Length: 175
Image (tube, rainbow, N blue to C red; front, side, top):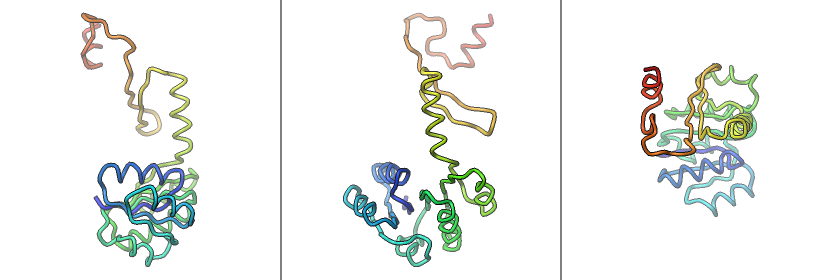
């Protein structure tokens, strides 16, 4: 995949790492010179030290062949502008972080896939790690549901529900 990542900060940098390690071709646009320099030294990718809110910069990053653009800056207004320009440049998949929950409706109106308030998600993940340490991972589905992966602390050979899916173990326990 060819990915354009806007921002090489706290969210963009780990994303660049994941994307490049996974074998994707990556172009990064970062306005801050020090961050751009660090990304160019650290990762095997194209790094452009410029303003991503101009079509020219987005074109320089190769949006005409991009499979996706992901905007990770800490400014919702910048992310909206980048996403609108990416739509005009017909990037097939556009994703953005949204820091202020009040801005979610704007991103939805323009049809952008979003990741809401990443700092809140991290805080929630850390809280769950303390509240329920046996939960390895979880994912929210809407406002009232979540999917959990639970670590089993011990494995006794011959345990009644060992190796069963939760639904099967649950129905077997009712017998």
